[in-house]
Image (cartoon, rainbow, N blue to C red; front, side, top):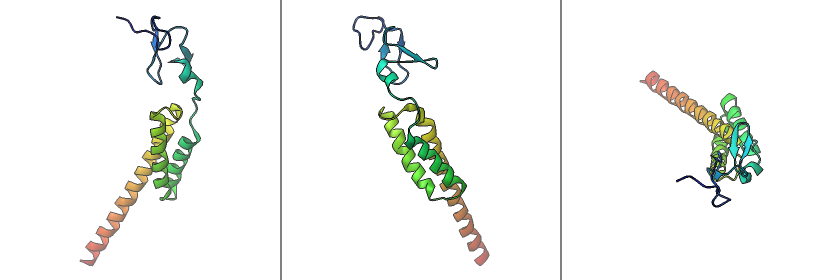
Length: 127
């Protein structure tokens, strides 16, 4: 049994939309950058959202100079990841949002390890 188009009952599907997973026929398939999209997904912007970019910039800022920005980067990045998973934001921003979260987590980990090293050093020095 072959798959049929999600919009045209009885018409055989030729591919699957890379964004939503819907089967598409030749009339519904939209090719962009060697990817197949259904007509609905092709109408959605495919550039990263401002929120994804802000997450990345906050992550970089937190990592390079201002630690508290890392917490904001993690929060904004997670919100963007959820929006992308619900198809409420362009999937093109996923990489930026994830890197914002990663940089934030790395910075917080480094700060935590630094604090632990200082406490341990003081304990050893006092004892």
